[in-house]
Each structure stands twice: as structure tokens, then as C-alpha cells.
Amino acid sequence: MKTVVRAGLVAMLAMGVAAPAEAATVKQVTSICHAGTFSGTFTLRYETTGGYHHPLDAYTTSGPYIGDVGTQSLKISYSDGLGTHTVYSRIGPASNGPASLPSGLAIPATARGTASTTFDNGATFCVATVPIT
Image (cartoon, rainbow, N blue to C red):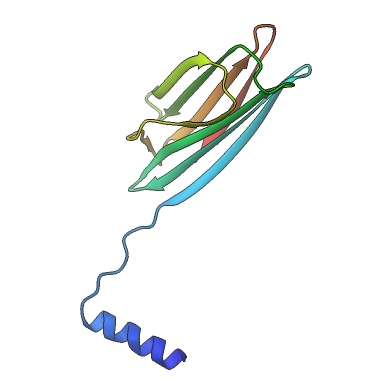
């Protein structure tokens, strides 16, 4: 069986089949914050292609109770030695669950990127931060 597979690969290479392009590496990072009994969990998924990290989506939960009222902010930025650059920010009502991000967000892979979410239930708040590397 191995001989057949190798022969097939050799035949494909001989026909000029191109090698696959750089595959995207998808990473998932999570951070948890606490302020007394109140807590928040923030998860960010991003892929790395072409020398850039591209944030894909985020998932948040907060409370001790799902559906706590309050606000939530999200900031995605990077530092490159010339300063800190914000690529995305949003402030809105607290939400528990998935959140899509706009396409086209890009952080140079050579920079130090972070994504931070501030959870605020009206009485207390906490900040969860994840690295983008």
C-alpha cells in the first residue's frame, strides 16, 4: 500500500501539482477575571497567515448569573516599538455567548498583540486580557 501512495505522490509531482499554500494556524486563548463574586471569561480565536494574526471571533460569559445587566467593552491592539495601535474596539451591552468580529482585522505577527474585555455589571467590573502571539 505504501508503494502505491508513494508512486501516486511521485506521479503528482511529476505532473507539476503545486505544493499547498501556507495553511492557516488557528489559535484559541482564554482569560478569566474576578471581582468578588463577579467574574468574566473571555475567549478569542484567531488565525495566522501571511505574516499577520487575524482575529476571527470571541466568546464571553459573565456573572454569577447568566444575563447579568451591564456593559462590556472589547479592545484589540498591538505594540510594535513605534507605539500602541488599536485595530478594533467596541462598547455595548453585556452579552453572554459568541460574538463575530469584522473581517479584515490584522495584527503584524512580529508585534505584541492583546485583546482585552472589560465586564461591568453596574456594581463592579473586571478585565480579562489574552495575548495574540
